[in-house]
Length: 240
Image (tube, rainbow, N blue to C red; front, top):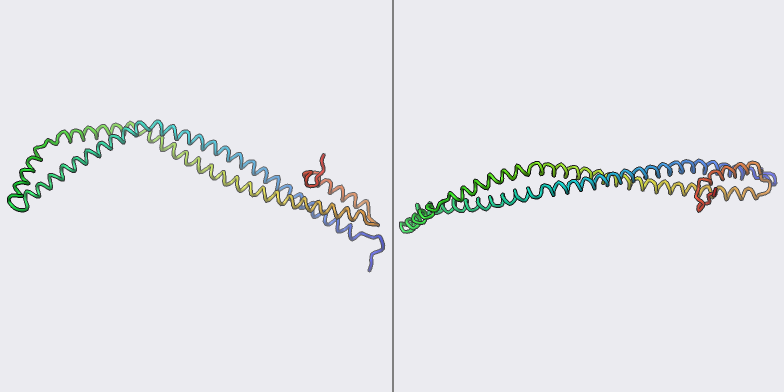
């Protein structure tokens, strides 16, 4: 059955349905965009706070290492000197063992020559070498003891800095995720705005048709204007 001339009730119903749909979509998108923006702001604040804590931890770590440095250098210098003395002692003992072996093996001439060399070698006084070793070992232990609290402080500072860096990285990842969520929410809001504009265009078209129920159209127009109050003017929003 054909509708009577000038009856555009079907178009009005379609405009009403479209209006209801875009209103609902816009409200959801607007709420989600607002929540995403709030979440992003919080994530940025947490990241900034984490970066500040990381910077403080890095400064504390640096100070601890600077305080430890002279004690560490002294200990390492003594350890290097001890290593050198040990190398000399090992060389002395190695030569002793080699000459003893040569004095017991081979021909008479070679054994006798080795015995003479062994006697001369053993005649060298190893006492200064041993005393120096004992002195250095005592000095190393003293240096190690002096360094201990500074070394412990450095390790604590390093652990704190590592934890702060991990927290900062975690906060940065959370901020990046919040930023992506905000972009998605903004895109959804933009789509909702586009649908509002489409509904407005269709409503304008219906209004200009003959037989329009102006009262119903007025209420739909009013509802659309309420939605557009929350839209930026660049997207067709109403400046107020």
